[in-house]
Image (spheres, rainbow, N blue to C red):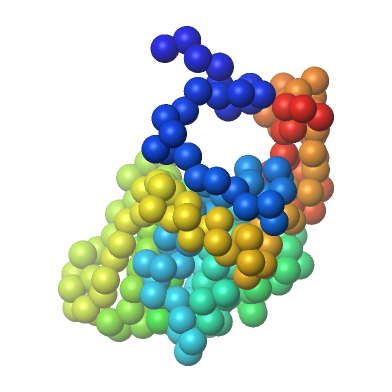
Length: 218
């Protein structure tokens, strides 16, 4: 089907696939509903709630939004990244603690959520989860990511894989609309279509955020 793509001013979509955005959600936050749906699903799969300690691996877009949703659900969330360059950004999304490759988390957590593309992280996440804890895998590596199933069985662990945001889009919209989660710092830089090619090629800085918002009408 030769239909215009996502950067067109108008896109043909089945009505059953649409969600109406309330006036409280601006265009930039609206563009982040899809990754927000993934973040909500990951936090829900981790059973985030009061008294729950969660480790989110990866301070990228999904990791930061997952942190925000888990925090909104009442959990205490730490983030594990490669370096400290996103520590301040992570704190703005509710992270209580921040660990790095050089200073990894010293303890274990009720749930660990892998939001990275590192093939070593699934096994590392498993090692950091409490017995009878939960593991949520939403990141995908480009090569196989082995774990030892004996560790799953002997630890009485629950592992959940997340693919796609569809089931989380409605809750993400609700969280954005009432202010429980503010995704705006993900995309602090906005460009028009004339700069879209450079943005997609990684030639424009994302600023303090992780993404660039392309405004087709800008």
